[in-house]
Length: 525
Image (cartoon, rainbow, N blue to C red; front, side, top):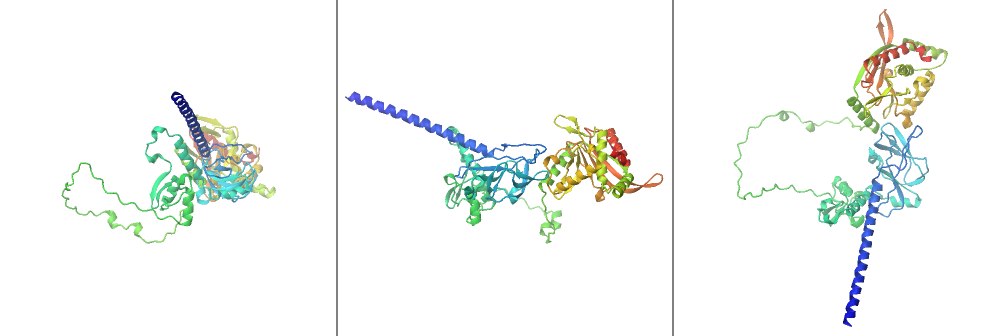
């Protein structure tokens, strides 16, 4: 009888161990699954890979969105990141929002206007939705890297109020600790607390867990966020909590740390006495002693610092790179404009046709590029080779309120003067209005910059890579020539890339340009 009880007890113990083993395996599997889900969600959030992107002559925008699920109980939504609206765009500034929070939109509607490196481009929606929350606007929408979350979109209008306190950093900061914890090996359990994502700070009310974004925001304002009651997971204080406290004014000032006492050197006896101080040296009179510091002078400031917009920043960056990496050389030609002025007057009086001097210069440049195709080439720095261009596409420099932009006249050597005039007028107007499509100002094989209408006699222009040359045109001025005769002489200076164009080739181009402009009737052939 006793033996039977022992056997039954052993069987029950064995069954209990099997059940415990199964539950442990199930728990481990569930933990791994949750860890994998957390990593996938964090990856989705940080991903800047477009879901749909396209470029082409008829495509003016590149847009994409990333669907992210935060750890809070928000309704289903989509986070729209800063799109790359041109192949060279790495950041942008949101100039204005076309919609307000709560407004619905359809595919093709404009969400906002974004300043790129070239122009202000409309960001169009690719699907229907409702704008639930604007994440970036005003001062916080300047120079945003591509992929930065800018707004939240949902499908149901009833879900919009749920995003009133939505903060983009909350999802990222909350997902980071879970990802780090899931990948932490068991042997690292005793590592210092400095490796954990949320920082622990001790305040007047006890111990508080601050997310990095919340701590940085509070300290930047000189306030103590450790007194706040967190609404995040596990009582963590989020950035949203700090923003609400800033609005309510419930955070006390951050206590200043006492100056640290000088460290004692190990092994130094307490009775060590300092060596006798040397006799003070005679004070030396410096220039600073006899000069008045500008900071101590009282005067009224009459200037204002104006930050550069995105376009001017990119222009400065690229022109600096051009001067540093492209070997420029310059050739200048003196060209008489008397026959051009005569023909313009004749057409205006008899044909009521108004053609500017700049139109003649562009047409003559196009034909000169056709005659000297070595100038109508580009340099590929990756391959270290010259790439001839089959078409003559001239970029025309146009001054706009936000900076200089170069719309392109495609196939300038194949269109007539009247069509060329109308094309340039249309491009210049849309450039000043910021309505150019990306393919209308990206590319080109040659550039022309004319400052003659501003009274500039001559200047040197900087090459716009990968183009190999740019023509800088000055104003015409009366000049005494051998004869003696007085002619209207214009200075035309060619800036060329020495890797593509050599001096004899530049001279051939200048000669061809001069012949066309001094015989303007040949431009009609």
